[in-house]
Image 1 (cartoon, rainbow, N blue to C red):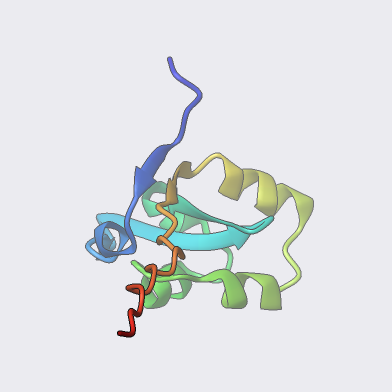
Image 2: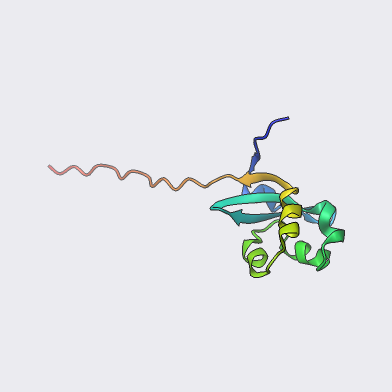
Length: 100
């Protein structure tokens, strides 16, 4: 089994927004990570609504606003399925200006 994570676009993650298929994005160490939390919905102490309200989206701010335990962070890490494809930040080169 490969240890490489699958690469997703934000649009792909946005398609997973139901109780039967719930993905979220959380940024960690400068990298946006994709988690499939579907199987954890019913076990979440705050209820499934917390994930469902953020399904298909970047939940980083909401996740970090709450002081999660080490155990909660370990549980989340088991749901990791991939990372978000980094958008190209390359600036297009300007066309050279010629004067005559």
